[in-house]
Amino acid sequence: MYNIFEAPFVREMCDITSNMYRMGWDERNGGNISYRLKAEEVEAYLDTKRVLRTLPLDFDASFIRGEYFIVTGTGRYFKNIEKCPQNNMGIIRIGENGRSYDILWGFEDGGRPTSELPTHLMNHIARMKVDPENRVVMHCHPANVLAMTFVHDLDDKAFTKTLWQMCTECIIVFPEGVSVLPWMVCGNTEIGVATAEKIRDTRVVVWAQHGIFGTGKDIDETFGLIETVEKAAEIYIKIMGVPLKQTITDAQLAVLAKEFGVTPREGYLEN
Ligand code: 2HA
Ligand code: ZN
Image 1 (cartoon, rainbow, N blue to C red):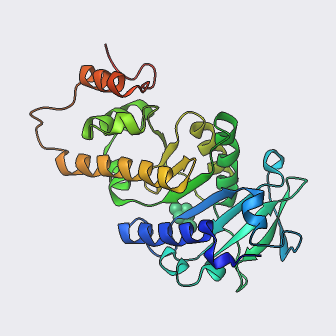
Image 2 (cartoon, rainbow, N blue to C red):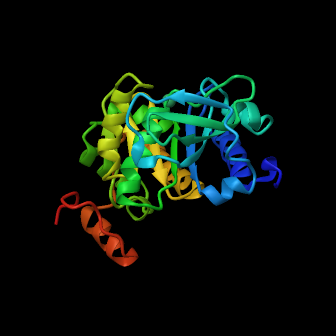
């Protein structure tokens, strides 16, 4: 058995959470990540028959029965994960009945997975149905996206189009657009269901006055997606209220999409 502290997925979680902390996206215990692992990856580092604890799930997760996830801990600070991964995150496996999960590693000082675990798992399920390669769900609190939800219309199309206009890269990175949810209480299955409805169509769902939910096939892709949305929101916050002399037009966005071989969300560009 290899040393789990050297496992690429543990190293990757340590690196990304430190980086996200330094980006200013994860103050205090803000943010959470879950990353679906392959059984063979986990088996190289852990005796998967050895269950430390079993905890209940309050929704039906049978679609992902037997799946492994490395997930950040509730109340834990991203800034501390790299220093002490075994206390601040853990590896879980969804039970065969879809109503519980086993903790196989981590949460060593009595912790447990993020309060947003139901939302994460529901969103893994929703994304896996459209993209079986989806492995990552990442939530954080980037300041400019949050700021934008105070001053911008929260309609999916309007929000997306503003972001697309802020940087040339945007329509290439998220041609399907982003979705936006109005303010809701977090940490329960209700916000999980509402997010999962939207995440089928867009890999990013913005939670008004709270943060962002991003999904992707790996850590880099998901981080890059959130980074691009946040950059666009930053430009918006810098220029809003200032009379614009020019922008990127719909015709230019259409040319860009064609040039880069991406299909913009239908009905979002005027022709
Ligand atoms: O983990 O970000 O949404 C703290 C949060 C809850
Ligand atoms: Zn949050």
